[in-house]
Image 1 (cartoon, rainbow, N blue to C red):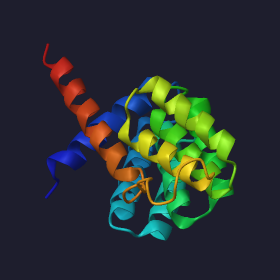
Image 2: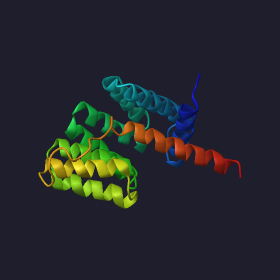
Image 3: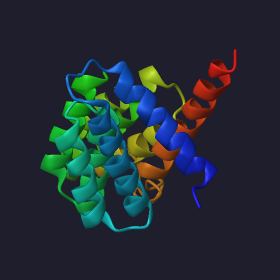
Length: 183
C-alpha cells in the first residue's frame, strides 16, 4: 500500500525532473524517481549503504536530479564520508542554488572535516534562503561548540540527519503542486 507521503514525494520529484531540461526519455525520469524514493525510504530506515546505492542509481539515470544529490550528501554525512558528502552537496547547489538543505549538508560535511569557518558560511547561506530553519540553527550551534565558541553541551545535535526534513519539505511542495493543479 502506497502511503500519502510516498505518493506526494513521487509527485513532487516527478515535477522537479520534468522541469529540468533533459534529453532522456520520460521512462528514465520515472526510473530515477523510483530509485530516489527507494533511497529515501532506506535512509529513513537507517540502511545508509543501501540508500547510497539506490541514490547513486538515481543520479546515474538522471545526473541533473538535484534532490538526489542533496539526499546523497545527507546519506554520506550519516556514513561519515565527509569529503564525498561535500562534493555531493556542491553538485546539488550547482544544480539548485536555493536548496537550503544542500547548504545544511555542506555545513555538516565541513564540520566533519573540521573546516568550521566554511561550515558557518554554509549555514548562513541556508539561513539566508530559509530564515529560522531549525536544521541550520542546530548545525550553527554545533559548529560554534566544535570550534570552541560556546561551551560544550549547549549545542543540540542534528536529529537523525537531514532526510526526515527533506521528506517533510517534499510532502509540502507536493501538496502545493496538487492544489495548484486543481485550479
